[in-house]
Amino acid sequence: MIIARVIGNVVATQKNERYENARVMLCQPVDLAGRETGATLIALDTVDAGVGDLVMIVQEGWGASTAATGEPGAAIDSAIVGVVDDIDLLPEEQRTR
Amino acid sequence: MQLARVIGTVVATVKNDSLEGRKLLIIQSLDAGLLPQGTPLVALDAVGAGVGELVFWCRGKEASFPFRREDTPTDCTIVGIVDSERHVTTPGSRRRR
Image (cartoon, rainbow over all chains, first blue to last red):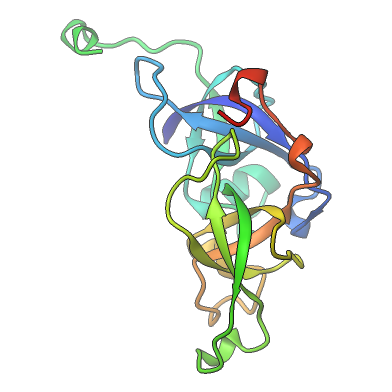
């Protein structure tokens, strides 16, 4: 999974039917120090994450479709599967952040 | 998934049979400020997107699921049309850096 911050959401009335009543969230991947890294992406929320939350995102379609809609086989490649409360690193790792 | 703008169309008369009758569009992925990120891609349209529209697209094997799954060779399919730029809600600071 990657760690990202939820930075907004996206409203799309006209969309693939498997996206029906899905929460389409705009997310920005961040490193362990919270700095932005990598490309902005869209993930479907499955844990009621809100804008500003630090979250875990699965970027594999089978898992993401199942988490977001209850079954695989949808055109979904990313889903938020957890809200991160805290990250605890080894001391020597912390110094490198 | 990622946000993108449809910036063009592709005509390819000689192509894989299962791409027959599918609309091929050029898309430019966008970050949260709707600025370009990454390189333009050729995407299959699954929701009736047109040139100039703001969309989001699905990556990987899942991208073939809206079509005849097994034999549609696509790893990039448009699965949603964003209602308008206003419908990409992000905290103020991110808009059009």
